[in-house]
Picture 1 (cartoon, rainbow, N blue to C red):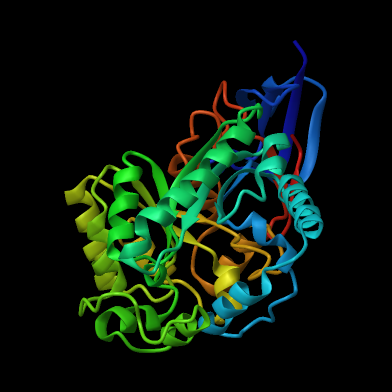
Picture 2 (spheres, rainbow, N blue to C red):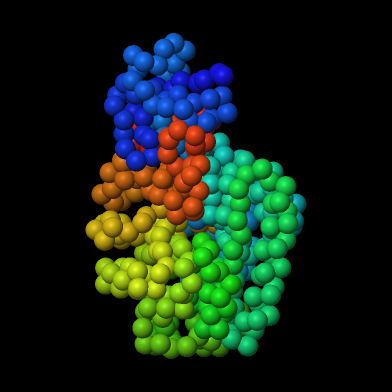
Length: 391
């Protein structure tokens, strides 16, 4: 059997940095065999300048919006950004497919090996069926009114079935699940139906990306009325609970789901404590997904990383879409974390590798250099600003 042997300035195994002389040994197809001291590795070692890491995990992306690159300018604020996505996403099918192909290749070249991908359509199904990336497709439900809930759930189930049918030919693992878009776009009955449909599954929701979300649920007023007007509604269609969005919607879920809370820029320490306690009591698992470059692009704000670390939250990373980011690079997400928070190199790499693999429940294959796994091998700059797939 042929082996490849890798040595770099630093070797990160998914959990920790190894000794400086550590050599990674893998088969030609990337199956990990061992990590050994340099004096035991023998000849034919490949040397790299930088950090060698397992393949990177992108836990939140909107591949189907790749055609919106450079369409929506930065720093519009969330409400105007959402209105732009609603009104500007209509492009011809050929352009949409062309940009999806480019975006998938960019992620693959950057060393991304698994993606949690949001979709309102089946536009990405063909590309995913040919891709060597692992795909968890979150088919995102939008439904403002209870009377439309059954009809809308049926529509999105058909999209999920179409994606699943296309991906049956894929050699890579894949999953599809229905998910709620955001607290401001889902009615109470719709939340109930999604809870019933997703027992034991991995789902996601855009969580507390703006303070106006809480104002909406607490008072029925605020900046989100502008978004509803875009959909032809005067006033809020959602109930006034007098509580924050997180406290209003999370209790709908009690079926053992793993729930990715995405963005969290307006989430407070009190809310984090409450959510973690609720999750423990209800038998669900919470994952906090950070998309810091999207937050900077839209609102020029950052998520409360220090609070999430303080309370031992399970933190993963995402890129969001080309409508709200300059690139689809988990390395660039780590670079921004360094610039705007106090995370260590090790913590950032854990978020980008083993944390993401565990959250997507693919850690038996991905996320770390352990014997028998095929996690991919990625080379990163010392400052984590760039990444390149090796295997």
